[in-house]
Amino acid sequence: MAFAVLFEFLFFSKVFVRNALNVCGEAMTSVSSKASYPKTFLSIVSLSGGLAAFLLLASWLLVSRPVVNPGAFISYRVQGFNNTTTTDPNLDGLRSNITVLDDSNFHVYSNKSAEKAIADDRKRSGIEEPQPDVLQNEEQLLDKYSIRKADSDCDLYHGKWIYDSSGPLYRNDSCSIITQMQNCQGNGRPDKDYENWRWKPDQCTIPRFNPKLFLQLMRKKTLAFIGDSVARNQMESMICILSQVEEPKNRGNKRMQRYYFRSTSTMIVRIWSSWLVHQSTDPFDFATDDVVKLHLDSPDEGFMQYITDFDVVVLSSGHWFAKQSVYILNNEIVGGQLWWPDHSRKKKIDNVEAYGISVETSLAAMATQQNYSGLTIVRSYSPDHYEGGAWNTGGSCTGKVKPAMEGEIPENGFTNAMHEKQVSGFRRALEKKSNKSKLKLMDITRAFSYRHDGHPGPYRSRDPNKITTRGPDGKPPPQDCLHWCMPGPVDTWNELVLEMIRREFNNPTQ
Image 1 (tube, rainbow, N blue to C red):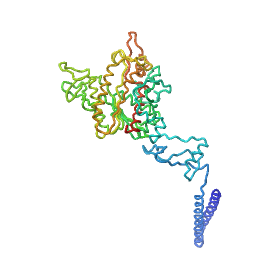
Image 2: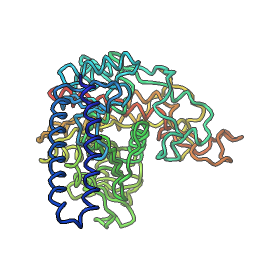
Image 3: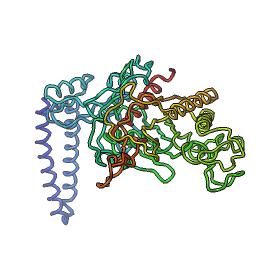
Image 4: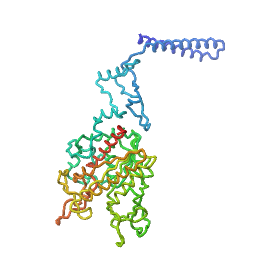
């Protein structure tokens, strides 16, 4: 019936249009004849009225009996807001509730079973139903990535390193922002197994980092890495992992690195802060202007001025306390590192004690900042692996190609002391917390004491003539046993960050 009506509609439309054109033609040829003008005008009016009446009748028939055509137009499936499956890339953070399916083998339906019928048609045609990239609620996140709520009570920091043949989360040549000194494969390191070890807690399993899950959890949020060059190491690892699914826009400047992921309006930030406390070079008491002064009871305003803009902060420090500096507390010089010109005066604190005070100061400032309500993750002291000396006195990690076994690692007194003071400072700051922020410790120190294989060692540059083995006198070449290869063990830190974010955002009352 509907096809017949459509055929008649097209046929009579053609006839009416042709007659109209003929009448108009006659009108034009006889326009000079005043006698024939009224007759011609009336003919045009009557013909137009008839055509309009027919169009109205045909339209009513087509609407009441819709045409079901297998080769029809593109179909749109309308879903509820919580089941969104597409995001308009031109509207940052705004989600569309319409899914545009591809235009092959579609039907047009006018009843409530449309969505089921479309799915059935796609199944018969061998077309897989598209899976949403953006997950909208906790249950979908947990089901999609097999993350059990029970794991929220798991101790993440006691476990072992296991070999994972699936390989790293990215390659050194698939990420453009790696600092060259940490690009171990690009610098000629011959072994690669250090990339394939994963941390396995005793009580659970940390899921492999899923960039889409991270970006969804961090939708319209900002994550900031604050600290020294090891913090930069971790930030670059995070960007490398995320860039495997989306290349970010670099919106940074000299004061702050910023990488923007447009799909979820997520920002990753890095701010340099060597000691996390206020520093100056102005002369103070008997300290001249050629040495840095650290005001241990005052946080670094370089990052505190931005703290309320951040939703998650990963804070780390410690290694700069081995560098020359003066310690000022309560407006008094109380100590110094590699500096103490007046030996008649007695030092009140050393660099380890100064570190503990700086941790308490910076964290307490964040925990009492009235307008800050974010999640602060304190990454514990990252162990170095210089054996046989310090970084500048012949220390080496050359030849380490796999994680150390239990009992193979000599105790590092300095690392242990720094870790202890950091944890003490963390606990004191936690007691002072007065705002709505959360303060968590990511305690990686013991787990990473086994990873002497994860450092660049002598592979710090592309120089083809660099020395990578000990000399005839047994002296090792210059090397880096502090920072971490990328990809490498440092990527585990960000898997832990993701797990902590997942726990916090999905279990806010925990």
